[in-house]
Length: 270
Ligand SMILES: [Zn+2]
Image (cartoon, rainbow, N blue to C red; front, side):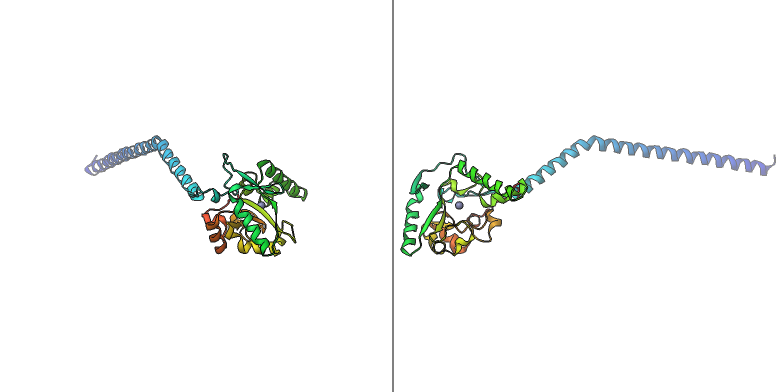
């Protein structure tokens, strides 16, 4: 073996040693990397339940916030004459009223008796003869009226859900009718006694529209306000709210809901 051959062998050995060293180093580094990855994964899994709980809490908070936004805090007045009853404000279960007869089997809240009689008297003086078609109704009467209306729509060919939705706009769902309060009256004029839109052409209606606020009454379901009141235009349904509120409502041409700053939600009815 000459010197040149020795040098060649040495070079080969050096190369092999270097190659092995680099290989070992790389494998050590790679193992460390894998360990670190595994540890990270393990930690993620260990902390996952608390992260999920946090997410749940955030979701619950978001839902509560949304619900609050949908149903804003309502500060409704306590006054007996300003009680709101509509689709989304049912009559309180403990509601009681002292009724007084206005003749022909009709009754109203005794507290509105004088204003009501004064209104009819003033109308007569001006040549408008007004008749009562409906006044205080107990719950049984409303249940009958409402279910009859649903049946009517079903006979016309509507599916039950649609019949129920339509009926609610015409005859209030039991518990949501102002007639339970003894504060609402369906009034017609002597020359036309139908409960339909033609009633607005009568002398009685025109007189009431002009003067009812003076006696504490409002036209409760005005034309074009169904999306607010949840009830069709009813140029016969008048509601007692007291003189102050009535004058503001009728002067501004607003609904009772707008006066109170609320609405009647009917969209969830099905
Ligand atoms: Zn009515």
